Image (tube, rainbow, N blue to C red; front, side, top):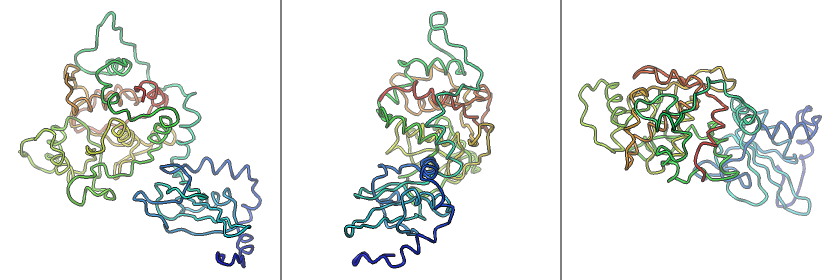
Length: 386
C-alpha cells in the first residue's frame, strides 16, 4: 500500500500490472455494462463508505490501488468472497490515489463521506430479477387465467365467501375498505422512491431479517434469526393454536387478543415463520414480508425452483383456510388482524398464477405460489398513492 504521508508509490505499478490480463484487455464499455447489472446502491444511496446495518464501517476488505472504479467492480464481481466494493479518490497531494476495497462482510448501507462510493453486489440468483424489475416488466403478459370482472351494477358489492373473483373486485375498487391499511400508512412514496420500493421487494433485498424483532429475550435482537420453517398465515388466534398444537400442547392457555409476545412464544419452537414487528410494522412492511414468503427467502424457509425463471417458490401454510374467509368479517371500525389476513389472501390471489389452488388449500396443506410477474407489476397501479 502507498505511504499516504509521503505520497510514495513504490510497488503500485507492479500491483496494477499484476491484475489478471483479461481485465486489462476488456473495454471500459464492456466492464461498465457488466458492473451496472451486478451491483446496486445500499440503503441511503451509494455516496459514502460501506457499513454494516448497525453503522459499523472499516469492514474486513481486500485493498487494491490505482484502479478505475470499473476495474474495482469487475474484481469484486469475480471474487466469491466480495460482497460490495468501496471506491475512493484520496487527495493526499496534487496526484491523489484511487483506492479500491473489496468488502468481505455484509454491507447494508453507506455512511456519507465525500469522495467515496459504495455499491453492493447483487447475489447471483437475484441479478436477473433486478434487471427484469427495472426493464422488462412493462412488456410482460400474465400467464394466469384472466379473472372475470365483477359487475357491480348487477351483483352489487361482493359478499359472502371469499374467492378469486371477489378478491379481484376488492383490489380493483380504490374506495374499498381493504385499502385503509395503506391509505393510513403513507409508506409507498412517489416517483423514484415508489419504483425503488417495488424493485427492492421483488429482489428479496431485505428478506434475511429478524421478523420477530423487539420481542423479549435474545430472539428479539436485530441480528438474531430465531425462526425457521414454512411461513404461517391466518387469524392471530388460529396461528397461536396451530403453533401450540405443533408443539404437542392440546389445551393451550387461552388466547389473549393483541398479545404480541404470546404468538412469538408459541411459534418460536414450532418451526414456523411468522411476522411480529408491531413497533415498526406498516402495510408496506407486511407486503415486503409477504413477497419474501412467496419467493421462499425467509430465514430457514423451505423453497424450490418454480417454473418462472430465477424465482423460487416458498412453502406456505395456513392456520386459517382462505376459503373460510367471509367478506362480512371485514368490520367498521376495522379489526386490524382480520383486515391484514384478508389483504394477504387477496394479494396471494392477485400475485399467484395458481390462484384458484389457493382457495382449495386446507389447513395443514402446503401452498406454493407461482409468482405472476405481470400481476406484480400491476400491483403498483392498484395500490393507493403516497
